[in-house]
Length: 367
Ligand code: NDP
Ligand code: GDR
Image 1 (cartoon, rainbow, N blue to C red):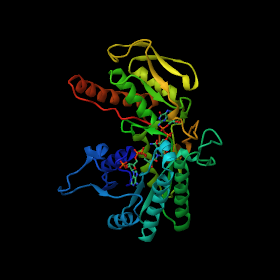
Image 2: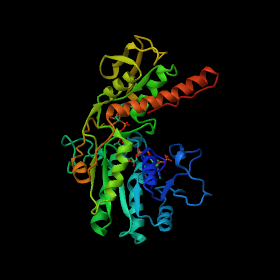
Image 3: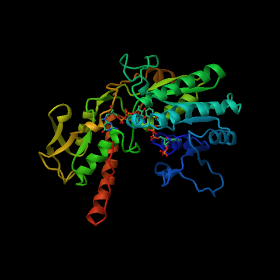
């Protein structure tokens, strides 16, 4: 599995270990620890009967990927690794293409080169970003693509390579066209985690205002735990196929903020429009948000978070996945927001305690 240290990789590794799999994850070398999401499933390398292995590797390194595949000879490969931030892909388009597009080709080609086409099944983490400027609502497996970011374009190359290796070499390779999926393990710079973390910090007096970009963007948000199950289900089919994985329900960034604030006992009122839009506190339950005052502005818009090209509206139709694989998302939008806010609050409370005892708590800037 590539991307084992990421949100999905951590949930998928847990899921596969529970199923009795031997799991090999590729992690990047970093100057500080980057295994926080998988530390709880880490196994001491000195143990006998290990089932979870970590290997250093990188999607930009052909020889490394080929050697690992040759040593492990896996039954299933899950390619979850990516430069996965859409806004960052505008700043680093070439790197994004190298990892997300050519990285996928490197893995597919290694499977072919090693003669593993009949043994190894391949899952590709494709994305709704392929649809970009949407041509129909809701989006299905047959909706035409029109990506709107270097990330989307790179993922589109990977998508078609997967289809091509399936058709040309008979590889059991499938694309999961996944809509946004979130969790307490979501990267801190994606909007849902940014919102839940910042509002929890504001509630605890660690921060005063949350700055966001496009409040009108509409997304189909599900829970990562539900979506990794579907990734595994796709590889258990007899024939490889591509599937849309989504909830079929849509919310705006603004609505996400409202739900998260509600969960913290903060009722907000929107004032102004466009870049002047703000959220003002209308009422607050002091026991949940002791530092927040009525009339305070806790959300503002900052132009720097707008993207050069935006995907405004996304709504997936997961009918094929439901019908063919019997998949159902189990976590509701409300339950997911609640889980993320409560996680953010638990951390904010720890930080507030540290701060009140004289320790400095740094708040990194977020995109
Ligand atoms: P994350 O950003 O949380 O994780 C990305 C993973 O890729 C991390 O493990 C990261 O390692 C690794 N990675 C980054 N660059 C490289 C590289 N050069 N070589 C090897 N590994 C690398 O993403 P998610 O878990 O949320 O998403 C998983 C996959 O699904 C991604 O491919 C993403 O593009 C795709 N996707 C995600 C959606 C979502 O809503 N979450 C929706 C649709 C698709 P490190 O920890 O060292 O940074
Ligand atoms: P997205 O996720 O671009 O959909 O890609 P993100 O959470 O970054 O943005 C969702 C929407 O919120 C708007 N937005 C903001 N986004 C961020 N990050 N920060 C802000 O301050 C902010 N304000 C508003 C964005 O403009 C956007 O419309 C994610 C990634 O996981 C991809 O890897 C994956 O392919 C897709 O989901 C499916």
